[in-house]
Image (spheres, rainbow, N blue to C red):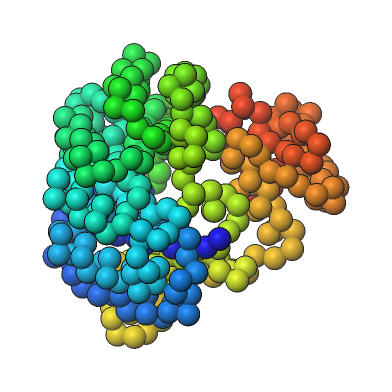
Length: 363
Ligand code: SF4
């Protein structure tokens, strides 16, 4: 199983919490960037036809105009063949830039799954986050997607936001569940250095977030969306296959600025600078990298455990791995953070929220 990730680093405005490689108000650079993507994709023609999943993320890929989307899909098809032939193809969108025409165009291009950003269902909270789209815009975009024939829609929701009460969160979740999405991703607010929130001194609210997260898991389960990964809930058969491949330490190729790849046991990531990326790719020079490292031996096995433990089903491990990591696993079992059933190790369902404490053992 191998996945293809494409990064589109453009947004209409910058959200206060965002630390993704993306920038706002630079739509004039999109055409050049798409040409750079085409040039980088040409370097990987040897992998043509080996991809099972596609994920176009960002940034805000739906910001691309219909003509730009056409150019992007022409590039992608050279690597993947028609998107309709893949096991899954996901496209990230924000409601303000997803109209009926684009929804139809994505469907026509063979995209099978849409990930749509909601975050909260209250205008005042969304404005506080610096989001452009309000719940009414989300509703319009969601309806456009259903009308275009999309039967697999994921929505992003956030908890632990500044000025967000438990009641606000419950209302957001109920409002979203009323639309019957197939998948929900739920994230607690993290305040990273370099973001507007960090500069403004916004604080994380881990305790409030934990309460919202646990309440959400029960509500989502009652609505038929099972938690299958720390932050992800899906109806049966609607789990994100592209992301499952990451958590199973499968291979993937990432194209675009800031995009990471894992091929032949080697991890690397392109420069996060869109300008440096575009200039290098267009002039035929190698794209500058943030890092490149070969993952081998114990480090590779430790990473496989960490990734596998993200899934609620945990990970099946041979006995020699239980012996090699005996001390780490022993401490986690003693602390009641994980449980072992035969050869399977998993984080206890009621401890998923503190999974970082588990991962620290394997770093
Ligand atoms: S839309 Fe997403 S990628 Fe763009 S600024 Fe907001 S959080 Fe960042």
